[in-house]
Image 1: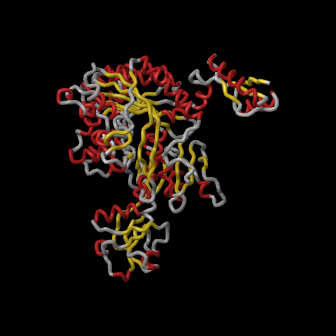
Image 2: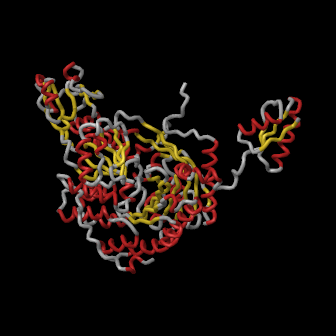
Image 3: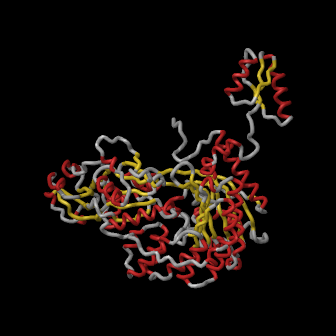
Length: 232
Length: 402
């Protein structure tokens, strides 16, 4: 049975909708009275695990779920060995460097060396500032990172920005983007290699439904295999 | 004071130790039948040896705080290749060697996130190395030995056993068609099963689609080799592979072991430069269980040979991960895959402390008969109480001295 790890929160509705279009109905996860963390699809041929965002690649990397849907930001931050299969296109946002609007910094390189940068995504931030050759002191926060510059604990933050409204309402501005993130369909590499068809067929259906059909069905041009080649 | 073992380290109970020993001895029996001799590579090696010429990421090595750059072995092939090229250089080839013992690897919890901790993982391995032969016959011997081991362990259709094969040379030949500057990225994307990375490669559409088709190419070996011949043209490499596959196809089928050739498959460690393999089972859980892996590593052997031996250096091997197999076979092992764990010992019990010498004499008399027996460490009031103690201690029966 195919198991899919789906992230709670903003991506859930679109994920359920996309899987429904591909033939697997997990809509019971959207029922506000549902408290089950593992549900079967309406057809009974697959099941979904409802997990936190950052746990999706963990369940997939350990092979407990063959497929998962999670933001590219989470994949970059946790760097677990999962196969990136399809860019699903929804859940778009930017990973940005933001500062106090009144600070006068207008690009990341304006920040003073060894300044403090608060983030939930410290690995992404570390890689970005290392590439800029700008030494910074990273502070890991679990949420509400906008408070870093407001309280004076940090000069800047690295965080996800969707509409920019939270930044604006807290007197911050985004000055540079690290990358653009969208929801990705990820897979357990070994399960994909051991698959005899059904898993790849589901991936193909999801790819065909996506705005950027990166892994859309490529004609496999099945060459007829002569009996002599198969007989051993 | 810490009461638990360090993260990743194993603290095994008697049943687990017994299970491991049963499996290791079953495998050793098969290795010996095939003419393999036991070696015991060192647990501690120079980091330069352990990194296997760059095949193993230094971050996965457990380093020791010593003056010399030393570490704990993350696998045993590099140590055996070193010994074969130096201490055993004068022995006639091929060398057929087997080993068993723990290996140690460093793992970053959470894939290396700055917030994750470092774990040292200890695993018990058992494996073989065939050194000095580079013919298709050696590849076939190793694969048939692997199947014989699986048969001896009772792993087949019931456990959905799959033997996944790949070949370093085939992948390299396929990547020849990609411009040199994109080859490393294309290889990484193919072996990492990263469709999106392939889509992002700056290649002409036809080449990109070719790579996407390649990533989907896997399955029954003869059919896949036929497809590869259409792509690469007839060549000796594919011919040898077909011969190797032919020598194991019917045996694998008879044992219920599925065979699959996957040109984009490469194992975790980049030690290998020829045929590569992995055995995967499925238990009651959804996740596949990797129980064995290996491959051909001629260049690694060459690193430890003199200039004269370099040209003919060859080696191939595989290792079993014993503990995942033990978990998979738990029920079978309990029923006695081996023959040495049939019943519990006899409990020797006595009513008075003055009867202790007599009880010890009886205990040793049982031992002399080859019967396992243990002593009740304090006198007990009655034979009935002794029976109760025997049940509590999983003993088969009681010898009551009154």
